Amino acid sequence: MTGASPDGRDKKFWYLQNHRLFDQLSDEAIEDLCIISRYKEAGRGEHIFFQGDMTDRIFILKLGAVKIVRTDADGNEVVKDVLGDHDLFGQLPFSSRTDGGEEHAVALTDHVSICMFKRSDLELVLARDPRVSMRLATHYSERLRALEQRYDGLVFKDVRTRLLDFLRRYVELFGSERDAEGAVPNHLRQEDIAQLIGSTRQTVTATLRQLEREGLVCYSRQRIRLG
Image 1 (cartoon, rainbow, N blue to C red):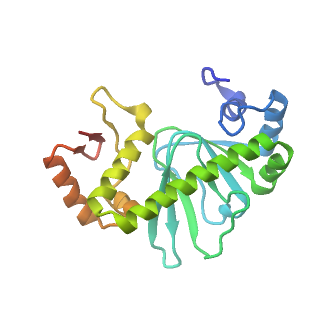
Image 2 (cartoon, helix red, strand yellow):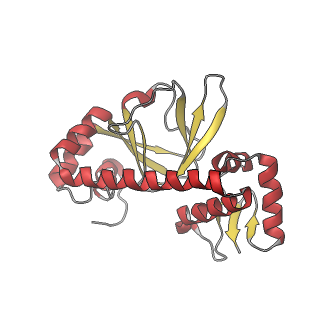
């Protein structure tokens, strides 16, 4: 079911009803989800969750994009991933975290809409409805496949190829925001990109310049376009 975005208190119902994880559920089941979830909107640069909030929270991204940032014990930050519409993050069901690090998400787009669940509450939903369990299993499968591809890239591909692969994925992620020339907004720093592809900012800068000279990429702080 799709339609125009609503205003006011109905937003949470509408976003859950139109999320691919729950779009087969009845209105009554969606109402139950509304009771056990919290709805939040964020703007560009806003932190979605902070230290300590990850222990039992699951975040369902309905609209917009975020970057997931990892902070180690020394306070060093690394960008782990970029997520878009319909993705999930946080302490997902049946996962665990044992290394003691902390993560937070930062809104990349002007409008980010998420619903937050307690992990235990979502696990009850999964137990009641196998359709949601199957959708979540599909999500896990897609994420694992993406992680395998990134790992293979780090092992078998050079920086140039990894950078091009990332830019293609990035342009696809923000495809709905393409302008008349086919460019999408650039929401990342070169340092972010370097961390995501396992390189350094200096190498990414030099490689981007080479790709621009070859006409393969048009890159600026405002936008990214593939040739």
